Length: 188
Image (cartoon, rainbow, N blue to C red; front, side, top):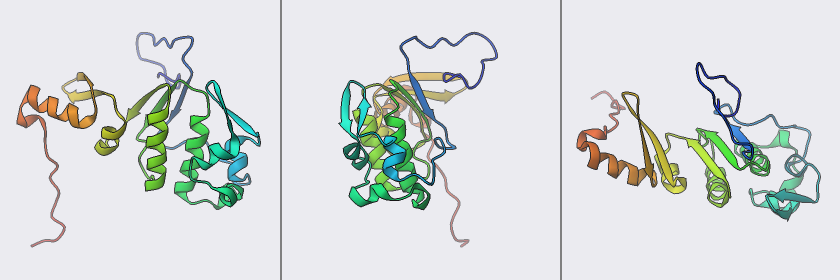
């Protein structure tokens, strides 16, 4: 609804005039052109990329996402899933948005892409809204948590997930944290 893809059942959602939003759902980002090279897909064949108020050499920017020299000339259609995710991440972060909305961004990411995402978010000058069940990812990138705690209750907490969890136990007691119970792997 914030991105305008769905309408609210009631009321109005007003996004500020200066807000420029880009978002990624669980289905992943836009389609990539398999015939383009990594460099062409990310840079649009421009020598420089505008990042906010700065201009960065395109080859340097592409290298920030793990594509060094000859790798930048690979065809997108020949990339692994993790490499394709890095291309999509690079395109997303150069879009000029000041608000990024990410829905389960760590699903299906390799370690290198996950680290690139974390670094990019930590260095992002705007605001990021992230929906994630990856508590370790949230520990590393979150500065605030908006938690849906059940029974239609929302709780806003300034801090990362680990700090939120400690606060939740303090507020609601030990019963607030329900450990995950796994089925046995082998029948004994």
